[in-house]
Amino acid sequence: MTTYRGTVELTLSVNGEDRRVVLNTADTLLRVLREKLGLTGAKNGCENGDCGACTVLIDGTPCKACMVLAVTCDGRRITTIEGVNGHAVQRAFIEHNGFQCGFCTPGQVLNAVALLERFPDADPATVREWMESNLCRCTGYEGIRKALDSLRPLSP
Amino acid sequence: MRAAGLLYLRPVTAEEAVAAWSQAARTTGREKEVRYLGGGTELTTAARKGALTLSVLIDVARIAELRQCTAASEGLFLGAALSLNEAGDSGLFPLLTATVRRIADRTTRNRLSLGGNVAGALPYREASLPLLLADATVVTLVPGDPAPVRRERSLRQIFDKRHHLDPGELIVGFAVPTAAVTAAWKHERATRTGPVDYPLVTACFLARAGLAVTGLHPYPVWYPDLASARAALAVPGTIRADQRGSAEYRAALVEAMMRRAEEELR
Image (cartoon, rainbow over all chains, first blue to last red; front, top):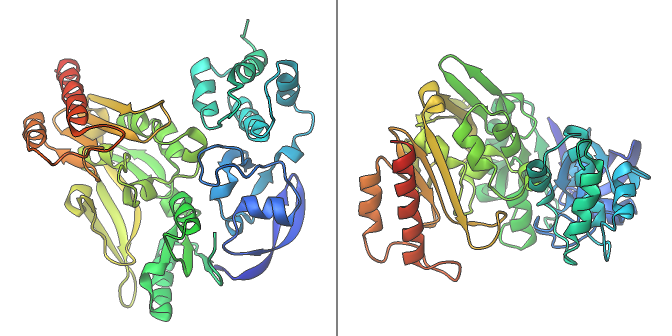
């Protein structure tokens, strides 16, 4: 049985690299990424699982890092926005103005990356179901929708 | 989340998890601070707000038996550690699929576990509605001497306003009979704002099994038929009222949902 108590040193696989990190068993993944590993792309928005600004991928699945204990992630593959440099989704967001202040953008992009990897030809209902997980306080949803539409093979 | 010296355990089997609970509860003397960890959404947010003190977390999310999702001639088995998306996307139980697809948002559902939603502290526990209608059997492990004891009981038997599990009892999964999986069904959900919101009311209907509703009270309720639901709705002062919706409005929503279900499932 795996056992950790209090402050422990763990290896986390982040963006394809094994990173040794000293963390507390009560630390969320968001706190460890931002404060221990310096990966500040995942944003601390609501810290309550509502906004999606802290979305990261765990084994390719979008998760809100504010609600995940880092200690549960050993042996998992964690991908943050720093790990998807130059992705087609990012280029589409730029081309279609899929952001305003940019605070929610890392979470939006990572969720969209996972969506299109799983459903490259996702229909609008599926896109909506997935992207409802991320709030944009600037209400820049139209640009985000256009960006994602541009990546669907059958889009006009 | 603040929990100094939190002990984190990740057992391999369900038996090991329950044995670990017994030992931790004995050692700490504070069994309410010893919790099973599935998706962790409720525990991490409650602990962050200071509403919950944790001493020991027993992570059951990777236990193979709790992650089973199987279909056989006699029915389904859905492990308690399946995420709501894993259980719903399997498509094995269409009413469950329709119900869980409206709980929270998709990313959050990647962490919310089936067992955690049924046994959680939040009032809605929508995943329990299809399971109550289906008369699902809950498979659990309860601490015992010298070894944990396996139990199989009807969810209806142990679910009255909340689940009635013994201290340290671990939900392994839910067995759903084939008849319930293939029966005609209907799911309706009304919210105050958009689709990602807590429900004003959620009602699930299953042919020959009645309806199960959440939102009317601080807990889900199963009614064996529409007549008993209507009788309950008629009792004054029993339906939840808050700034999101009055008791009269909630009752009217459920009545309208029942009328539509009568039409469609006739």
